[in-house]
Length: 259
Image (tube, rainbow, N blue to C red):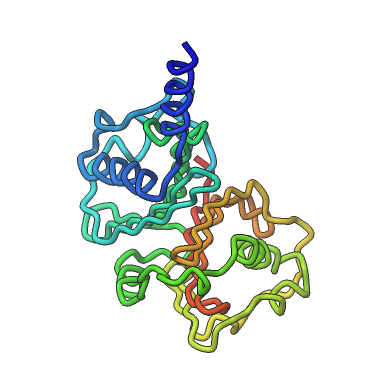
């Protein structure tokens, strides 16, 4: 009996091991579903929720119900939060999109998906031009950081992500961020280099809320989905990459309406 209990414990521990490989594999099932416009290949948990632009809705009423040609796809993984972040761009269809999606798994179990949380921008949204955004981001280098000692800490990445979102309410936040001299910022389709130019230094009394994080030390990145309360209740994704301790890339996806 003791042997059986021990084996069962090992099996349970193995099934609850949230690995980078399993997170990226699950993210790939989401990508495949989006290309097909069908959710039949997704393994959803009994408590599954779908959220689009900060509003819960039926998955059948969201982007996954329509197939899109994806011109760019990139995913990152957070083994601590057992979550992934996928950015995709569809610039060549009749309705272009730039999308950021966080996928979460309860109980460190990547065999099922408990939450698909999407911020999607399209024509008419803030600074939107999918073709221009695609052109900028295709040129970026997202090679994983191979040396552990070169990876930014989880604490630093979260601090940078929070400081960026705090710039609208905290006059000191912008200057606390370690800007790289060759960093690039893509806000919708607006390009700024170096990143540290033309930044807000407070002025709003409303902090940006509803922050949800995916932090990946291997790529040196943090994505924060939020509600951009400082300028209005806009669904928003801010992704930042840090290389050698300095900010290298910033991406923003901002929808003008909830839902």
